[in-house]
Amino acid sequence: MADQKNARVANSAEPARTITGAASSQKTPPKIVPLIFEESSDKRRGSDLPGGDSSERRAREILGDDLCRSDIEGFPELSEPQVMRHFLRLSQLNFGQALHFYPLGSCTMKYNPVVNDELAGLPGFAAIHPLTPAHLAQGALELMVRMERALAEITGMDAVSLHPAAGAQGELAGLLIVRAWERTRGSVRRKVIIPDTAHGTNPASCSLAGFEVVVARSSKRGYLEAQEIRRLLEGNDVAALMVTNPNTMGIFEPEMPEIAAALHDNGALLYMDGANMNALLGVAKPGHSGADIVHLNLHKTFSTPHGGGGPGSGPIAVKRHLEPFLPAPRIVDRAGRWDFDYDRPHSIGRLRAFHANFAMVVRAYAYILALGRDGLEQASLIAILNANYVRKRLEARYPTASHEPTMHECVLTHDLEEKAKVSTLDIAKRLLDFGIHPPTIYFPLIVHGALMVEPTETESRETIDSFVAAMTQIYEEALSNPETVKTAPHTLALSRVDEVTAARRPILRWTPP
Ligand SMILES: *Cc1c(COP(=O)(O)O)cnc(C)c1O
Image 1: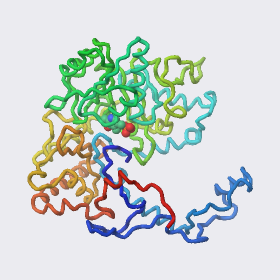
Image 2: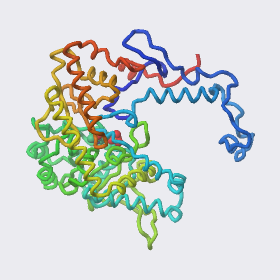
Image 3: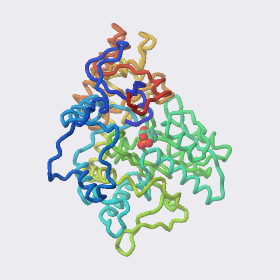
Image 4: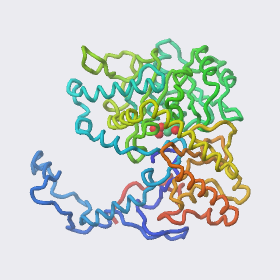
């Protein structure tokens, strides 16, 4: 998981070592699995059958022996069983959505259907080279065009680019489009409004695109009010508002149409961060509430692997007036064949190599076709139901920060800090002992000690009930035996890590002893 909100997962300042066996909060490091380099001993080998098709043999055939090294200095030498155990142990130290309930708010850690992987692995998709000329890649281009159309339909927008490699890069692309649009109007507005509930990537993307951030305060009820936006527009120097809907409080922004009208009257644009689209599929379209630009996270809403599991994909969708600015090349129909159009004078250009994280697009397209319009709507409705179920079942001990209706995630609070000096971090760590990945914590920033829970639609009632039971037990434990919670986790290889040292003095490279 490479999400910034999740920076609290195990991130040791120890040299890159892995750990096995039960550990507790003891001072001395528990027993560890050595690095693969440390397990190495001279001349150990895995089996390589004669006549087999090893990659080394093929490389030698193609390149010739004089270009191939006979040895790599310091390269680990192990037997096949050693390698097998090493990597299997590593995999067991991992917390992942395929193995655990993973209600990490705002990240939509839903199940990734295996059929998506099978389809992305079809040789015609998997083996295509990124430099294949358009006339030999008609199937892939057809799939991309159909995907663009599907996302345009889902968002209620006019044109889509699959180019950006992640949500944050979609944001940057969108903001560069705002800049390019401003320039064609001869205007130099330098400010972008961002609500105080925004995801950290929003202000970061603004800075990267050369804008100055103006923070909009959310109302006490946890959403943006049109009057606050009108106030911030008074100087006529705002280029855009960047807003997530539903916002990171899990609340649908009720004043969006009015806010969009205020922005447009003022000559500003509305950027919608669509990372939370899992609440809206088939339910509401950003384009209908005035958005000019939306980005989507295929690795969240559309079930492609997330974080360490695979590259992201952050397509952007725009209204017609912004289409000329989309990244180039665009895929166009030339006499019945798909071709790349590079002749796009207003385009913001490329943000990365090649056209898209194509295998992610294939996976997400498979997901959209598998579910269909009704299935997508059903997915969002169940995601909303599951979040409301969590909210209701936990409200006696962990009330929500806002009284507004909950969409696909809920932001919980608690009084354990005052009652038992047990922190949100302690609760999150204790959940690990139950085999549950913690929710997002201390975010959004406006909620003290927040626990942001997003169960997603792919979890069963039984799984969610076991989460509720764990959270309930932790609350009771915190009152009766706070030390158990404050020293958790007790069942994992690694307990608490020195996060400050890990961040300030990371050891990223192994050096031989
Ligand atoms: C995840 C997320 C992003 C950033 O997406 P990445 O693909 O992680 O770059 C932006 N905004 C919100 C609300 C998000 O949840």
